[in-house]
Length: 485
Image 1 (cartoon, helix red, strand yellow):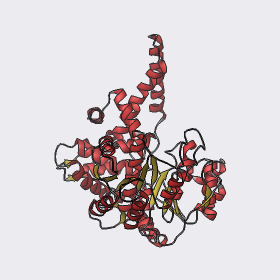
Image 2 (image 1 turned 90 degrees about the vertical axis):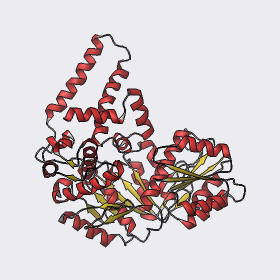
Image 3 (image 1 turned 120 degrees about the vertical axis):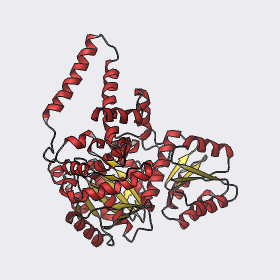
Image 4 (image 1 turned 45 degrees about the vertical axis):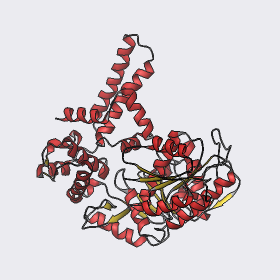
């Protein structure tokens, strides 16, 4: 369970934060002085910290310095009522994860805290490459006994200690982030920050600001200085996931950082110098993207200092039983179920499946199976219908289902028009959203964070849409299980 430390001398603020941020699976501890905050951090070892600048005994910036000295990887969000550009810049120079003005917007604060907790987890939870693994909640295992994955592990060992850029290629769900973290964990920068950003999950208009920050007034809504990921990762490692989806202007600025470690914030003139190791990944074919003028050749050649190409799961079938067993052990503890194994028939079904979603799809399938298995052994009937019904020979969907779905949409529009419906757009979008959310949630075993990532939504937005449609995760999983029985 992640722990958030809140350091603020105002009781009403502590109460509001505890109430507003309270969530399943999050533990919140508090302190009202700088000294108490430092002592609590040493004792509790939190995953992230919310820190007020004005404290009765110390300046929050001095507390920040001490916290970062104790744990350079600890994400600290600085809060203040009296925000100035100087305070923001000094806070970031001392290693703050981000900077927030009071009074805060709860949705913005929640999103920022979630990002900080995730950054803390990525930096502290090691990605361990172990051919002979044992389940351990304190690490994320990179599992692969197949020759293809053993070759990848050898390459990681060769390149991790060398301070060079690495480009990781592979289909979605093959484990590119885990490999990036394994490189980081075995690098000379492993005692510094590791930050990850998905270039495909952030709108083009916001990605440049997320990476490079912006000055106050740089655009509508820029009411304060914002420090970007490159500054936050100074002396550490930045993982640029799905870099193939970055816009050309953003690609140009990334190229400059790779060339000479310099950039300017959006709307600013000051040149910022950073020392960051860049690990990048993409599921796109960058050579084809260059031919289409969608990706800069000069950036590709800079990123291509060292390249790792991860094999899809269908090309490493020997790993499926080991991966399935690993996920079963992990989710058995998490879900508190008594399932102890997978039947040979179920393993055979897993081996026949095409796995277009690769290891991520297998992970979701095992979690789904544990939720829907009544006995102690997973059988083929407990697996998702999509896994039972698709073979490796069916790697591309047939056109008939797509045509049928389009016909269904057309039929719905015609029916609504015949009924003289008003607000036709809202009704149609609600119908499509219902199918979309149900299918995505069912495919990931009800994991809302994973579903939000696939949909390109924030978790709060996903929750809001579910509420609007009267959907719950348990209802979605129950209906999907009924349909697959």
